[in-house]
Image 1 (tube, helix red, strand yellow):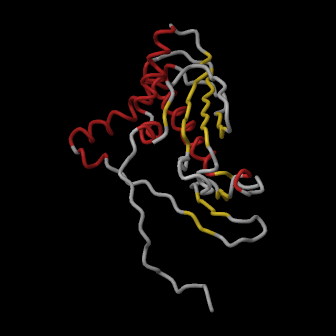
Image 2 (cartoon, helix red, strand yellow):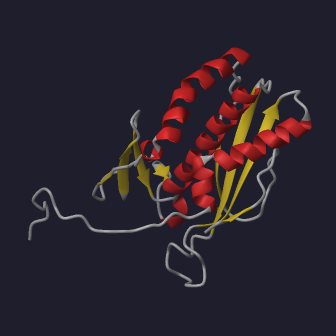
Image 3 (cartoon, one colour):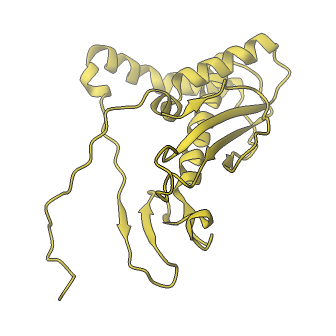
Amino acid sequence: MPEFVNVRRSPTEADGLKASAEADRRPMSSADAGDQLRAAQAPLKGRYRQEPAAALVTLSAKGEVGGEGEEGVSCSVQTGRALIEAGLHPATGGTGSLACSGDMLLQALVACAGVTLQAVATNRGIPMAGATVHAEGDLDFRGTLGLDGSVPVGFSAIRLSFDLDSDADPGDLDALIATTERYCVVFQTLAHAPELSVARRPPTIPARIHP
């Protein structure tokens, strides 16, 4: 499990190779949006209190692995809005023309934290002209390349930070960040590893590999 440095309101620099992601600055909603959000969430919260099983949803992702064609080793992932083709990071032999799955992980963290931040600020009526969310992760590629068994495969540290454009009380902003950390699904998943399993599914179509 990666080590999480304290979530903070301003980014810092760290030595070593980093993958990074940043959310665009977006204006926050007005107080009216808070009423709309609470109205939309109220029946859901009521149902989940009465029927806890209704709150359990299985999310899924699917990728199509391609051959070593023009773009090299790749896997295309359907996001629901666009098809993202992921490939090797340049530090592992990729060309850099395809998305890096490590960057995508950080981008997912940034997106989740940004949405959670805005939802909490809207619910609490905290004025916000905009915000920028930063995520950095440190990777030692010797691990994934199998060069040193003592080097972990994956991120050794991930840092999440926020630039908030707000004149709200600093204590309210600190509480906003703390609540965002508490309820950000991606952050909490990374901080508390879920039960993982790997399996090979039986084929549903004839194999395309011929002798």
